[in-house]
Length: 445
Image (cartoon, rainbow, N blue to C red):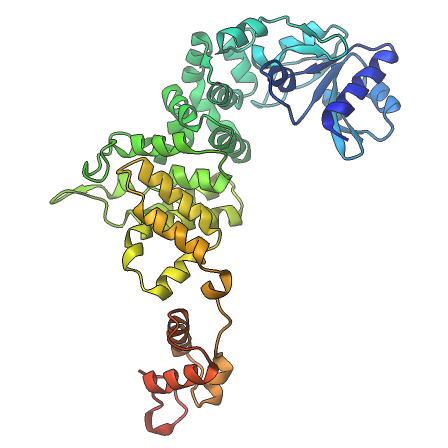
């Protein structure tokens, strides 16, 4: 079942039982903008026990706040009782709530006017108590009521304001904007996981460049990603980077992102994060060791924000390898094949393309590696080994550190099509790695 179909059924059943029920929040906003919401929230005057009685397969997901999750045939919608909130005590949750019968009271506790519209799907009627439709028309993100009060209630709303403005191409209402600037330091009190999730949405939902410009303008960037804020004003060699400093270059990468994975978007954001601390002026501007420094910094940043080990590994790999493409035309066949078989190589390739179009514009190496990726099948990139460590032991070599060097030399020859069989491999080993005096000792060249 589609979520929209379930949402309509839930509203119809609530109304037939004598309750008020409306679609509410982001799904209404997206409907009015001509989109197709993935998730649906419903607001009703029915109490949680009445909701669960009407929908026996439902479950309480926020009993204290009157939120019920209704499931059916793989679809689910959240149904919440109209409520007003008590004072917020932890920058996220109210100390308590009062259930209400007036939808206006429920709307007034919400974050932004564009997220506070109610829709009766049967009548196609919109209830707007806070001027949300006018703000949609004028393309404005505006906090409901007193902006400072809304952000003190839930500090994450400051990041959400940036995300909505960036994704929708809206501007932030001046009073709302000023409140974010005054209170930006409060974002430090928000859990790393919640900040992480909002940053990923800013990077991947569209408008990433504008999102990071707004993070910078509001003061939020220096609070949550000071390493990225440090990119501003760090000059680059104009012959390679005519676009300007590291910050400008990074913003261009974010502008050119199209439906990226979180790891690609983070790679675009952090690929040059090691440049500010390694900047030096010699014969020209240089960033010696910026890749290695960037790997270290990316690991620290992503660990701080509680990304998964798999995500950290991929983003750090993107940072580690983004400069290797310049050497592609001179790479040995074996080196090129090993490069191509990096995990999720298409992300490396796309990051290189973004890096090029955001600077000098030369795409020759991108085209070369794209062609090689399409041309070479997987069994040529990572063929079955011709010999193993057991074969080396059988040939009289003692296990030790040299084994990896021997096997790598054999694989090089295999990748370059110089050898094709186990016998070829054994001959190569005997030719390049002697056993002194015929004794079974560690292999030596």
